[in-house]
Image 1 (cartoon, protein in one colour):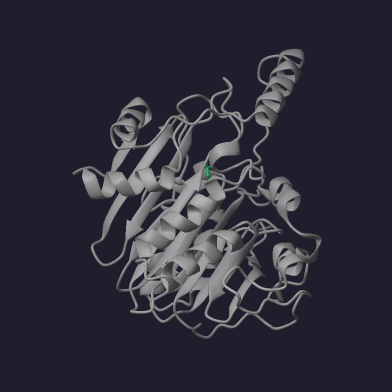
Image 2 (image 1 turned 30 degrees about the vertical axis):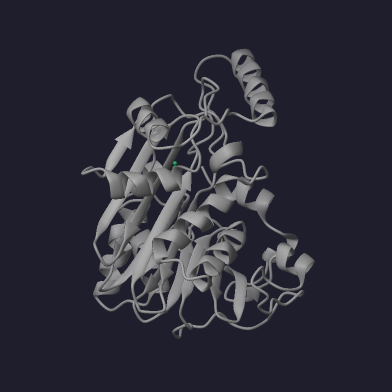
Length: 348
Ligand code: GLY
């Protein structure tokens, strides 16, 4: 019951460093610089992750693929875009990434071979949010979530209704799953038929959650996923649920989640992280504290596969997860890196 297999699959070898060490992602190593031309070391750095405030604008996203999303979001801000433009542009990079099998175009289908996508966006200054769940054949769903926020009086649209809204608002039909994912689903289906009813589907998946502190001190965030691999049709996880997969309070900070949605949404995980920051906790400690609190409700030794990241109004950031391989991308003027999160192992 862990994100770890997918995390490991997606991680560059250099990611498996001691925690609290910076490392450059393999993309940065290949490029030598970030997309915005800022310095990125081609070798893993031994610089400790700071607990101090980072320069603004500050963008933090889950997993190594978050770095390309951060770089795009940073470029959008540099070009004069606002925070919501940056969230949409950044997460859209991940949604269009054919190498990513847990978000967007190449997302893993549900048990019936259908890809259904979830996303949400939240704007700190207005405390408005938009969300879509169970959307089929539409990209980018992060942009669709923004359209729900800005063009309707609702927060959450689901399924056919969300799709109709998308088509009526200029989004085009996008065929999914991609052939590779269709073949993998067929193989899973055949294996499941052979194993008989009750055989468990894999739980591997990842989510992009992005939180951002603008140069003027405002906050925003977004989240996007195809959810659990081979989930039951109709299943929705934490990612599009405000307070679970994402929460932003413009006075305090912002938090996002990745992992097994069922274990995050039962506790309004991201909301709790922000509330701990409201009480004065550093973002890293707030993430860990929520995991401790959730773990106490479960038998010892259970890995709940929950991971959080957060930033506060001061520009401090951090992350913690039950998964050994949980890393997140941190981007601000002069630096774009992938960072190892604190590990909060199952209690014993
Ligand atoms: N965390 C994403 C999901 O469970 O759907």
